[in-house]
Length: 155
Image (cartoon, rainbow, N blue to C red; front, side, top):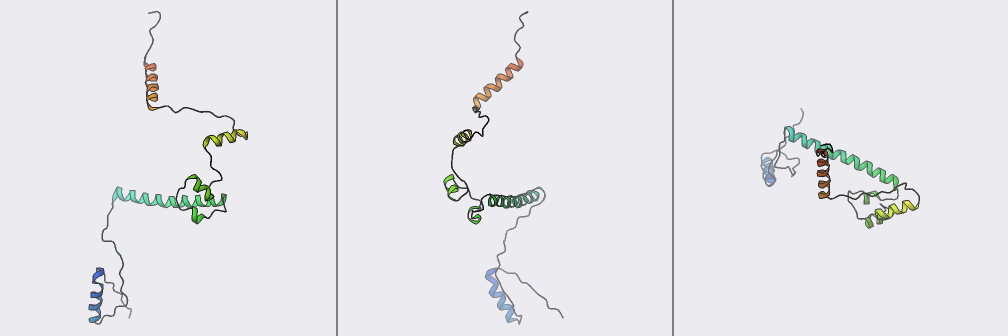
């Protein structure tokens, strides 16, 4: 005859009392444990459930991307201690250089100047960023130019 297994769930503070009652009735208790089971549950249905599912899938995809990035960095910089640097943290330049993540620190102007000196740049151009008021003025001027017709010289 097969044996049956019964599981009794109770509040943690009632565990010993339930055990004593069972033993007093001649029921041997083979194991007793306190396991944390959350008391609150949130039921999601429909659109909300789909959004949470997409979020979980996105997190899994992010883990895959992180693993691929780690492999790429390890391939390019085999001397790195990946357990130390591939933690998801971000470092300022000097700390990144200290960890071996970058070779040297430079401003963008210094990088461009150096590339020009090595003869690897064909053209450098600079376009001034326009302010919001300037962009609005230019947009209004363009709209006005599109609708205004100068008077004909022949009248």
